[in-house]
Structures are given as C-alpha cells and as structure tokens.
Image 1 (spheres, rainbow, N blue to C red):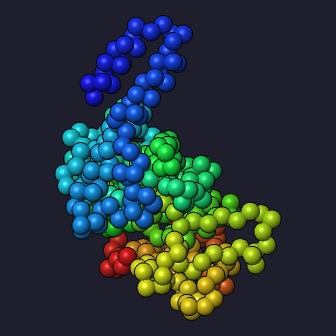
Image 2: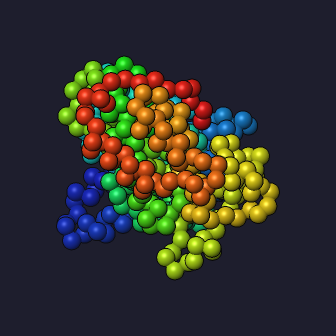
Image 3: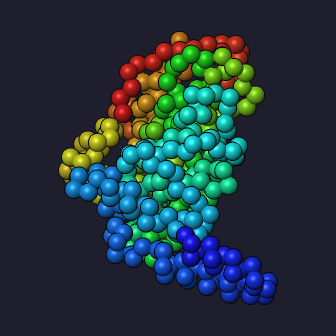
Length: 373
C-alpha cells in the first residue's frame, strides 16, 4: 500500500496532459507488484464455487479474495470484513441508494450489515458508502452466456450488473446489494399484510413476463431467486412507498432467438450439466418422466418456470382466506404442463383482482403452511 500512496502523490506533480500516462503507469505498477499471479487463483468456476467447502484448506476462500483486494481497490471497491469463512460484515449501514433503503428499524439495519455468501463465487464490497455484491461471472471463457444475458437485460425488476472488472481470464460482475430474499419477505409476521405480499408478487411476475418476452427461460425460478429492497410492515408502520422486487441469478438461464422454431428451442433437463442425483431442487412432473431419456426439452412448451414460480406461492399465499388469491397459484402447477397458465395470465388476473377489491380487505395478516425449499 505504501508504494501505491507514493505513486499517487507523485501524480500530483504531473500536468493534466500527463494524467493519462500517469494512470497507465499507476495501473501497470499496481498490477505488477500487487496483483496475484493468475496461477494462484482458481482455474474454473467450479473451483471458485467450492472455495467455501474446501475441507483440505479452510482458509481458501478468505485467502483467494484477499489476494484480489488491490484489484478491487483500484476500482474504488473495499472488500467487506470477514467474521469467519462463511460470514462478512460492515460496521455501519450503507447510505441511501436506488436499490436499498435504510429504514428506521434496528433489526433490519443489522441485516443490511451482514452478508453470507452462498458459495465461493460471491463477496460483498463497498464503494462511496453504498454496498454491492461481487460475483465471479466467467473464468477461462466459461459461462459467457450468463455474462451476455446480464449485459442484455435492463428492466425495473431485473437486478442490474453495474460494473465489470476484468483480470486475466476472470470476469467478476458487480451488483447492488439488497436486503432479503422474497421468500423471507413473504413469511407472515407481525405488521405484514396480504396487500404487502400481493404487491411484491405482482412485481416478481412482471420480471417473469419480461424475460419470457425475450425468449429467456430462467430454469431456477423459485422465490429465493428474487430479492427485495426492504421488508414492508404496513400494519405496524406507515409505508409511503413499496419495496421494489428484483429477479437475480441467470446462471441457469437459456435464451433463444426469434428465428428458432419452438420445436428446436431445446435445453437439458438439469441445468449446469448436473447429474439427476446432484439436482436438489423440486422437480416439475414432466422433468421426472424425462429422466433418463430424452434429456432435452423445450422450456416454453413445457413451462417449468411457471411451475417453479408457483411452488412456494402455493405454500405461502394459499391461506389468506381470499379465494381468488388462495386458488390462483394452483393454476400454475397442474401436472399436465398444457393446463398451466402463463405468468402473463396470472399477472393479468392479479391486476384485475387488485383493481376490483376494496383495499381494506387486504389490510390484514395471514398464515401459511410450512415452507419446503
């Protein structure tokens, strides 16, 4: 760090016409003396993902990410501190941003200052008092479709990739850090109303309709792949706005161009080339009968996304006491995929319901069944 500070001070002596040259010199010296050798970093995405679970080297995750600290600092990002290999923290809450509000709720403020990466691909960072999550998107050319999709997608309900950082053949993407997942935000608790939950689901459906309109099948469209700005509790505190909901994690997604016939829009039954025994998610009925043969299917003719989206809603929002709501999610999950409604149809029905129901009917709590992931 002393070398970097000396170089930065020398930069003050340069004229404005020499600034570009100084920046290139600064980058070259930092890269030469402070960046890790490429051979010290994981060779592929599966190795990055497994850093958290390396029983032979319990410090692999922390050591790997700390070696990249100069790279992120060069882009003005600071890695969050580590309390242990599985948990990260910040001492103070973030500043207000377009993606995460900081409500007057000490418990939720604590949530915003904690981060537990699900695997070794992720790390929390801060820049200008705003928090982000870094995800390694591509290594040695792997998973370029994921990177391409995130560059393509732009919508109010798709969490954007705000920056790319390239080092050798490694491409980390930077995403806004949000509070909690939608599946957590829908759990009934004191202060949360039916109205709070229905409006969050409506936004999630808008995201699904958007990607399907671009011929993108997500293939992991369970509610834990949606994030929420903040947790609404309109029964206990007045909410003047509603939290925005974002769809995340397009690692398993596939996209087809308009000129490909539907009969040729095929993908593997299990994403990421997983073996059937390694796929731990609930399976739509048609995927159970497709194993072991045939191994390919069209995700639009067999709408697995719709079934996955309805999976948690049937458990979480089918005991509100409002028949139009309690029965709506079942229409997304018939065993015969031909009988399933589309996300656009569910969104239309939900919008019509909200337009016609007196608001007071929705301003009460509800219960739900046990939740199975």
